[in-house]
Image 1 (tube, protein in one colour):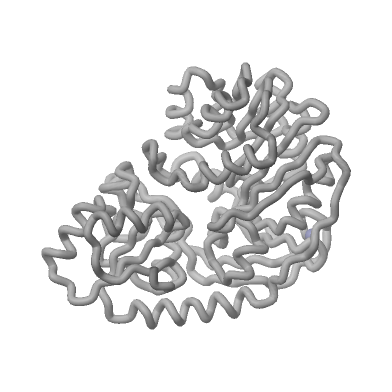
Image 2: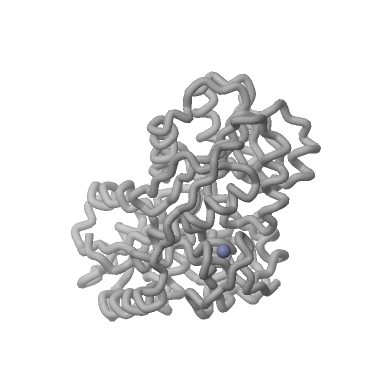
Length: 386
Ligand SMILES: [Zn+2]
């Protein structure tokens, strides 16, 4: 698919960012899994001159559908990678959206921990989940208080599920993966009643462009939303923006009400992104040059970092024990537990190793790094010392 016409407002797309040789598979796989090549792809995003939406004009829907079914992220046990979840729940409280509800629906619910919590907080009698990934759907189904539909959310599957009318629908880190917005919103509109609330959480283009951060720019993100473009999209389908905020790690949480008046949102500054990315790459390469590297974070940030600096870490760990023993498609290094990574560093007597927190969950990971006795330098994905 190739389109330089904005999928939100039909405005003209201008070049925003090009990233050569990016990894296709963002999540580690079991040792016995081998995936035929190619394993990398040149990526590019354009941005709309009117609503400032960013999107990939060339993407392969077949490859992405296969990733979502079979190579999606490894579910984490309770207590790991919970920062985004806590920030989302806090925003719901702050915006008054977690009050009494009847019927909830989450699109792309992973293991269902957030909606299970919201069902308790809101007193809802019904909580529906659409989750296409097999491994995650099994976890959600184990929560008997949820009604799980193991499928993508589309107008067809939404109607076929024959749901009770929904008064609160939300999707966290889903909308940036969607191929067909009209179909997605047709599904949203089919299952919700008048005055329903819709919340979309997605990486903020405004934030990441101003930081020169590559976090949202990977193969799975066909779209990167500005608040302006997200509000335009929702407005086109009958939803008015009511609240929004950007969290510390750069996630936009935007809340809409069905039938509420439409608000225009100011345009973000995108001009410096490509140059800031190049500067950051140079800084990282010089910070890490010639040093033994330990990566903490076996997800899209870690595999993206490998591609950016052109080398794998000497040791690769992650706080999610379900990732231990796995490896990335096309890469050699096996993910080990933090304990064994740190034991290895001691045993090999590296002279000046650098631990890179290759994750958005820096606030959660850094205390663990320290408590496990790491005394060397630590930096984040941008090469900033922590
Ligand atoms: Zn546009």
